[in-house]
Amino acid sequence: MKASEAQMRAALDKPSDAVRFHLLYGPDEAGAAALAARLGAAMGKDAERIDLDGATLKSDPARLADEAAAMSLFGGARHILVNPVGDESLDAFAALLEGGVGNPVVAIGPTLKSTSKLVKLALDSRAAMVLACYVPEGREADAIATQLMRDHGLRPAAGVATRIVRAANGDRAVMAREIEKLADYLDAAPDTPRDAGEDALDAIGADLGESDAGAMIAALLAGDPARLGGELAQLSEEGVSPIMWLRALGRRLAALADMRADLDRGDDIAGVMKRRRVFWKEEKATAAALRQWTPAMIATAIDRARAAERAVMAPGNAGDVLAEHAVLGLARRR
Image (tube, rainbow, N blue to C red):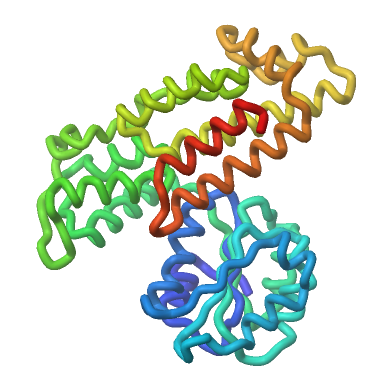
């Protein structure tokens, strides 16, 4: 059944036997991940989390229902996160919904559309809840940033939430990281709230919107690991979140994939770049990338960028090191 964001939050904050499957789909992967994390918080810090993905469920459709029915090794709470997921997992989720009461499941499908078979399956089931996740804009984004700040014990001055939204380009994961930095700087917590003004933002350098990952992406596409290393170091010195430049890389790769598809249909490079409105300063580098990068290479790069982003967002991760290792490997064509 279809749910509003408020309904989905309530369901994840207080999981029940009536809803066994929570599907979060659409382009706002960071927002979906933030919502999915609410289930883990509701289950408790000692709960066992089982991580699966669509590829695993495609090869073993019975795995999901088995995990949902299984008991925790330590006898405590248990829940399942499936990320990423697509229509390849349809049989697995059909089996899950046919089963009885079990451990709650939340799945994130950033590439799923409203017409996807898995979305339709969940919409038709009373034991599932479905929410389409889109990148927030305007007042909605400001409200999200304001609530995140309050959750961290921050009392934002006028304009602060808007500045964070603009700096993060509406990306919830980037907003969350900047707000965490701000809370640490001000020594704020829910039980010890602090005022957060423009001066504090200046102190932590929250100006992500002015940072440019273009040079880093150009070095990667050119296959120049040495230059890429220097650009990564510069981004790190500027305090730019790896999530932001990984997503910028993902957008560039997606555009490159579209242009490669045009070429494979017989179009010429100059015509493709003109139609796709490639900035004139980037035409030479784009043409070179189109000659060097095959569709398979681009698809692999997109998968690795998304995997690196999920790894960076996971708790207890190695931070920037994971993202930098992933892109350096791509530049070396490995």
